[in-house]
Image (tube, rainbow, N blue to C red):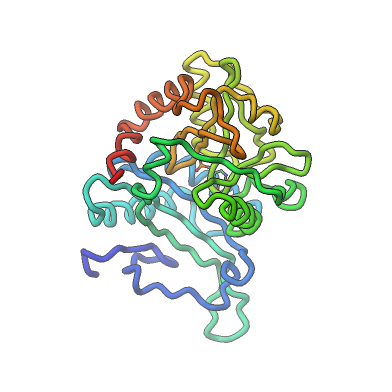
Length: 304
Ligand code: PLP
């Protein structure tokens, strides 16, 4: 294996990334019948990998896919992929390591491989593209397309079926190409975006939509814990556009963004417009301490 080429774990073995071929009849490709999870590294060390793998196995159970290996093995192979691939990044960069498991192909012929398709891959986080968000804040737009109700398909499972969120992004970005969509539910409550949870801060209280209606982000959980540790009141509750327009501060959370301030919702400035607001700033600093590096400085170092 060429030590300078990125490797992946694919169906039981490590291989160069260029030598992976997924069947054109794989159900992950045909139907979105697959799950995934994504962990980020800080200085090359995966952060909260075990928690992400735990969530991955919950998503697998929801879709009744047996990956054919236990969590320990999934973790070990994920660490192998990171160990090989992180040194190939330019210095100062970090990456996602992602596990993707589909139900595989509906075996019809003698050459069809039965069982799930298991892939563990890594790729660089787009720091340069996102760096301005830490200087200017995220502009959030709530598109007209509602988030799929949990009784149709639970948002708590991280599946390959992201079309609902993609449609939201398309609509938001047609209005403002640099905006981030956060979808409302059918009752007009905030839910989440394609890859992020949302928080509002009002009169010192740190609030986020209830866990039943969103993917329970690992970062979302960390922020709730950090806020509690900072003696800030926290609440998981229904939040609508009134709450968003009257919030003092708002921010998005995700594995790669960590905590990123929001400057506007549907064109309405959040709070006094200065980002990050004081509570968000405290949480961002606490997050950096926990991660063991100043992640905001890492993003900002990629500004032109
Ligand atoms: N919501 C959705 C739909 C996501 O895909 C993600 C990303 O994983 C999140 C929220 C944020 O979750 P986390 O903090 O675990 O990255």
